[in-house]
Image 1: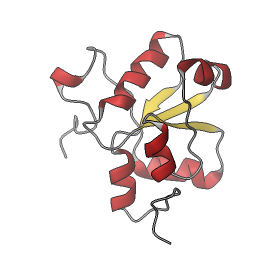
Image 2: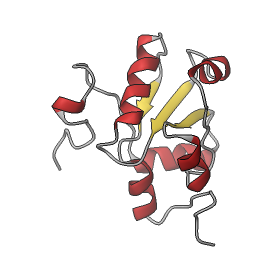
Image 3: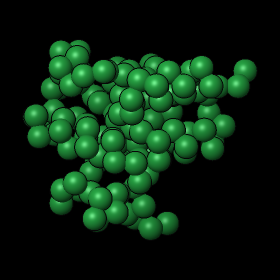
Image 4: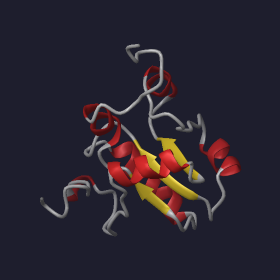
Length: 126
């Protein structure tokens, strides 16, 4: 497997520093164990309401996020797929603001759904 498959394409990386990532299996294990991780969906409210990974948080404004998530919290950000830049932008902003334990689940919603893992939301088939 290409070791950079979880990194955004260079022209879309929104910076040059590598992005710390987490695999689907590692994220699932953390969620299954009930680890204290802030899983943040970096898409808009409509997308969150439609479909998200169980346990995900969503914030309508940056101020809401920064009030609820502390700089030393374990944070995982995700959006729809590896080339979606919403999670890249949120990751970069959190790191720039001094958050020390941030990772990106690069595969996002599509990778999670393709693996047949549970989802929540208005557009999830029962």
